[in-house]
Image 1 (cartoon, one colour):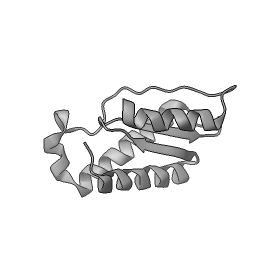
Image 2: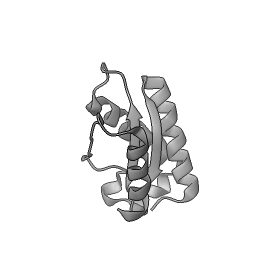
Image 3: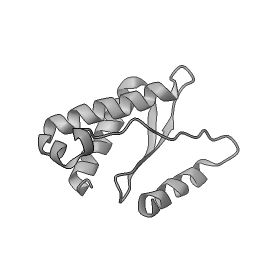
Length: 108
């Protein structure tokens, strides 16, 4: 489990990546059980796969570079596993998605 300081650093990294790669991180929550939820707005030219690759790859690199001691606590020494879940919104409001993500942070 990440400390509040590491969680804040992870969020800062994710927001910097989003700004650099051309998408917006609307919400970022680190759950109680090593679970991260992101609410992202992106132009159609960016695929979900690319966004996930940017977020997982770059945050993993920088977080483990700055805190190499974390590798000992991680399964196989990796910050992220290869899976992710994505859902697009259409008829659902942004507020509904934000509420869902906030609940996931404590109930996952």
